[in-house]
Image (cartoon, rainbow, N blue to C red; front, side, top):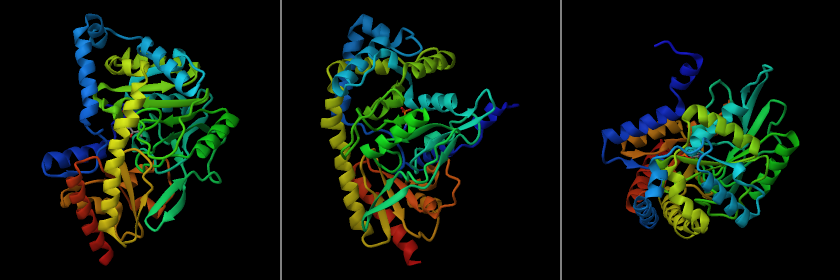
Length: 417
Ligand code: PLP
């Protein structure tokens, strides 16, 4: 097969592909693997019941059933859903928007693919522009979305030590690049992989820099605000005309329905709908219809706050506690777990690379993710990049305990030489 540049770029061995392959192969090789590597949402019975009931009502109504599986929506997605969501966002947060500020995509991953390539890369004048990631580590899923090379740039964060075993990354505004070549800022909030939640102050400063330079600030709220609200700290939802807020129904428990939601200026929404028409005709209708009632009566927010968030927070607290007990006084630290579904562990001056540690753990039947994947756009040869692991804590507590015990055993052996 002879490939175009586009074909070569998207089929070459990308970080996310090798990671997903490795996770899949490890699982296929060994049913007893302790899976602490993936990003699947938890299957919370109370949440599943809500969706089961809704699904029953949809199948009992001929008109809803037809909308569910039998009709193409417009390229920007179900307009009545967009209208309801705009009304909810106005009602709850006072954001000045209408349905023309909202479109749906096939999962938010697709929205990022469209946005990054629409805004960055080479323009008609031959100028090359990049997406600046103000806070690294950042979501690995961004790194290979560019149809051209070098779409991302990132610099080292500030590291604030909170106590012996806890730290937090902050945006380093002294080294943050923003110039004529900057196409947009993009931050995930909460951040995958670290569970960091950028402070309101950081978001405000990024917002005013973006406004000053007339570029968009993309906020990836896949785990965040206002739903599914996997946020365990104070943080305010943020949107403005030059903010592109990307939401998703995946971490609510609906990843298979592939529904991403973009809230942005009318100009951005019109452009994205045009791309959607070409690449997929229309987005999936099922996700929007599943949650439309919950948007209308705000119960998407109460379910997030009263059921989903507490469930994750409890699992996080259990795993954090176990780590403290098992790792004790080894030279380790954890990013302050402020959200999402991961703990980010830093093993200072680790005698091997995080990838080697990952391999050792895989041999022992524990699957985590090596931290080195999560620095898209950072060329800097920073040792920290090879000293971290991402650990998913959503499994059964007994399994998480067992996994953490093995991690601690292997790490102790390494430090003891
Ligand atoms: N953004 C972040 C930070 C993620 O972790 C993910 C998936 O795990 C996505 C976006 C994409 O999610 P989806 O395409 O399911 O909406």
